[in-house]
Image 1 (cartoon, each protein chain N blue to C red):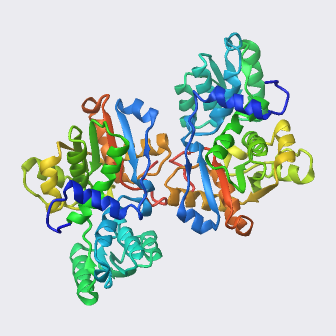
Image 2: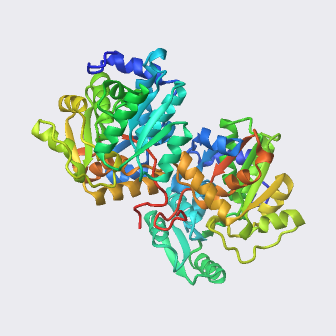
Image 3: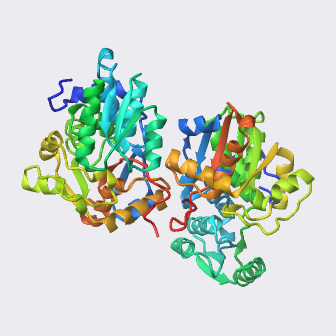
Length: 318
Length: 318
């Protein structure tokens, strides 16, 4: 696959073949009581049950496994304290390569342990964007490792697209497909999969009001970086990527935003009614369905549950 | 089915046929990381995804649906603030009957709401065993409702046995089947199903040390009521029933007990590794596997996850 071409249908199919030995085809769950509450018929693709507990395993595995063996010898590097860090760590291990993960020194202990548990080398830096990028650049130049961007990369986008591909294969008649949007790896990948495999399905994204750069960019037609994002949906604080935005502009029908309170309420509803653990980010599309009931009434809505990695000692429930 | 005969294989099969339209055949989940931690190969039958969020739906539905229509007209009554209350409420509604649920007046708001949500009439009483029984007796004599005991009833035992029956049908080569034991509806039912359908499987129960009456009774060979039970596993505080104990004595190989700390640790492991919400009671067999690793090493162990109804505002994690 060319590094600089929007993934085609065959790119996504090849990505799926490539990563299938290393990922799970996660189940689709439904809940009568959630349907009663929302008035829609919702199908949940449970990537919280994916390896490393999140969809990020798909994209990282696709990028890493698509390198020729001779290009894997210097390993892979990224800067992240979230699910992408664990994904790069585990996919590198499975590829027989080394992973270098740059993390802010104040990252939660549980995240450090998870990454170290996959055999990755952690390089700590000051907790700001500039230090992260500079440290990662230094690691790449010192080690010759290949940098794996968390979202603004067509290999990542093709990998993340495989979740929606499996979802459509399981549940072919969706009226709407929804994901949250942060950097836009999953959003853009899902939009492509829907466009190729289920063009009559509307692709809709959801974003926290407190990190609404994708919504703003989408409505103004130009990329506007996020300003001071402050949301419990910590996976969605990043600005949408350049490649991601091009795809989203073309294939997404609508972006909805929701408040922090709406996110926590939707998250609690899913925990209580479905007995599954979802991250705040996953609750963002659910909150959008609850907020705009008339838009989704009686529709078959597919929502990708992005991950289940939460700090149980620090939950937002009272 | 005779009301006073230990359920036969055909009683359990008939119970399963009877309740199938009203319950879910819940999925069996596995987790590589839980297997790595325990050293066993564990299969989890996820009754936390059952209607009303717990296996109790099976027994209550069996008892209520096995009444002739003319015997359903006065409704059904029970005293419970737990999952059995919700089960009787929902099963009565599905049977077109009225449910009368006696609850202590200090029961959590969320439990009152769940029961009322199924259309049941709640009768409040003082928060002690005597008041509960007296109030329930009064309700039964005033309304002519049929009392549905939560566990010491062969129809309940046959209904709960259907979880293990489905489990064995899904996963036929288990070395061990485990459930927690409180009143013993699930424990006795599972022991019967294992005895009939998979006699080479060892039936093992697990109980909190702080409510160890089943363990004590099992080892002394006579029924000893629980004394001052004080455990986070609130579903397991009751004394084991007479009918339940007879079956357990005959068909159970071993009962293990675990501490409160072991329960919380096992519960947290399941939440973190499997991303599913389980009640403390479900964690009791998991804790027993962690405590006795050599007993379970490399064995195929089936554990019935009994329910997922927890108060999210009051979790035991730090």
